[in-house]
Amino acid sequence: MLISRTPYRLSFYGGGLDYPSWYEKRDTQILCAGLDYYCYQSVRELPPFFDHKYRVAYSKIESVNKIDDINHPTAREIVRKYGQNKNIEITHVGDLPSRSGIGSSSAFTVGLISSLSALVKSEFLGRTKLAKLAIDIEQNDIGEIIGVQDQCASAFGGLVHIQADKEGVKPKRFLVRKEYQDYIESSLLMGFTGRQRFSSVASNKVNDALKNTKNLDYLEELHKVSHEGIIAFGKEADIQENARITKICRDIKLSMNQDKFDPDLMDLIETSERAGSLCTRIMGAGGGGFFICWAPEYRHDAIKSAVNVKTWVKVKISATGSQIIFSE
Image (tube, rainbow, N blue to C red):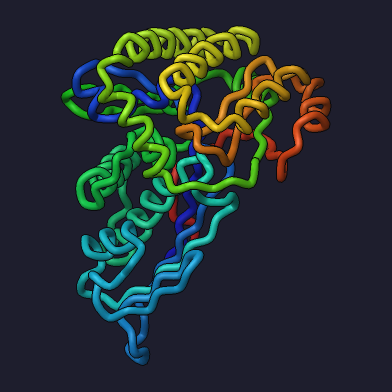
């Protein structure tokens, strides 16, 4: 048995521009991070006493004899690639709810590739290879309309800078002083609305926007401002500057999707900002779930009192990416 631990994703700048339909035409940079909250994948070879060859346990339990009969698309395609000649059991659990804007689908993909390749092939994959394999499986084998930052954040952990262009995706660690990272973590407050949605639904909204020629000016502006944000972050910009740039990026995205944005979420943004948030944005592609506030730590309690949500979560950036934490 092996167990992998894989962080979820926190996006800073460049989210929404990490789709091939954009970066293959326009060189793009993204800044994201792994969160210090994880999903766990345990995998083992099943002994030959069961009536099934494959068992996949997540929010459902599947016990089947053919790979094609596995309903979970990611598990199905990864087993097809790594576990065809084995009887395999997969169990998934997570620290945070899925389908909530934190890259949980890609964390699942990254963690399962990591654990199954180690179990079946005794191959412990490097971070870049792991991220690119996850991107390939999600975009090509499964056919998801999905970006590339989630897989890179989960594979690398920590702060991650991604260069994406027609030549491919090039992720690397983004290094800052520990004191600045601590400052950033203390300046962020993350809340959970209780909503969940399939990433493909939210991703379709983003991809539709990328295909709409009327939005090209918005996208060029988002590209420019996101790049400014990455430069500012590297120069240790203060919370006010990060919040200012993040708000510009958020408002550009809202302008592209005005008719599709939930008014309840807009009310959440406005309420939190009246209570002291310098900038509040919905995480992921904007379908609900988690949201994040840029706010000095002394304002966090006031924001929590003003905004009625399911729960609040402390923000901490992970020290590592996906890794095998148990093997026997």
